[in-house]
Amino acid sequence: MTARAADRARYDRATAHLDAPVAIVDLEAFDANADDLVRRAAGKPIRVASKSVRCRALLERVLAREGFAGVMSFTLAESLWLARSGFQDVLLAYPSADRAGYAELSADPKLASAVTVMTDDPAQLDLIDAARDGGREVVRVCLELDTSLRLFGGRVRVGARRSPLHSPAEVADLARAVARRPGFEVVGIMAYEGHVAGVGDAVAGRPLRSRAVRLMQAAARRELAERRAAVVRAVRAVAPGLEFVNGGGTGSVQYTAAEDAVTEIAAGSGLYVPRLFDNYTSFRGRPAALFAQPVVRRPGVGAVTVLGGGYPASGAAGADRLPVPYLPEGLRYDPQEGAGEVQTPLLGSPADDLLIGDKVWFRHAKAGELCERFDALHLVEGDAVTATVPTYRGEGHTFL
Image 1: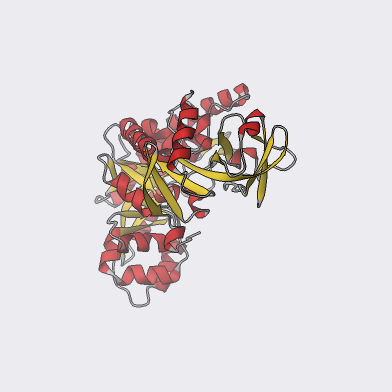
Image 2: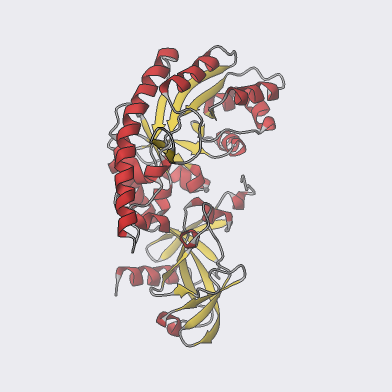
């Protein structure tokens, strides 16, 4: 029996009392992935990206482990909810236009001390000030650096379109604008190198593209390490009390951790190890989060149909954004139908051994987005479900 077949047997036994659709997290794999992240971070604390987990119980579990500290959140409403729930160090990774949230933040000393907001434009500070509604608490601010690699005099850009602040001078200018403004304090810098941390460099069947990605990422790492260090020096000259410099992502933990200027690493998807991480050479994790759909039809030889399953991930549309049939091994989508809203045909010889009601296990393309489809995660240890915990959705929150 292969390791994957053994996992399938365990998951089927653990969830035999549960009807699909159902989502699980294998705690042994989850904890092993956490250990691998800590090993690669080489002593620098890991701030957990909540969008990649979207379950308070699992955020609490990983933050209780040595090597993890703080949360990187994705909306202001989520940040405030986590802070009210007892999380004491929450970095909002994206600028917000949530006026009601800013009013609440600036009026509550506990929230103001626990939450740091992101900015890359003085207009965002104007919005916060206009939203204060009398709140006088100092708002903690993190400045975001654009990490994109610019080639040929800027005519070619590689990387996400995030912050407009690319040079040390631009970031320092905003730091001075914040320092001059009552009610704000610069406490951090964030620089997420998504083109390094979030792009697979070993795509099956595409050796030339994979080689090109590796060359690009090596060049991007060298350029960013030098520029990030210069940015930190420039900002510290304005804000000597700078508390943290955040960088990285699951796919680049060990490289970012090697930079002296970086004080902490951001990671989250590496806890669940979704299918997009199969295309990386920088690490090998264990799939920890899966979902199962029930077989409801057997339309012919070598074919079964499962209920639902059309759970595409965000990003540029393509086949790599679809969940992948994982267990039993050897199933594939019908190319004319793909993953359906209500039903999904699957092809392959393993289909002939599946009965009505059997479970087919899938891996989502990305990590936390799976939790937007399920209100609970069943935590598996060995071949038993030992706990069932709510996702954000299960607690009544769909923040985005």
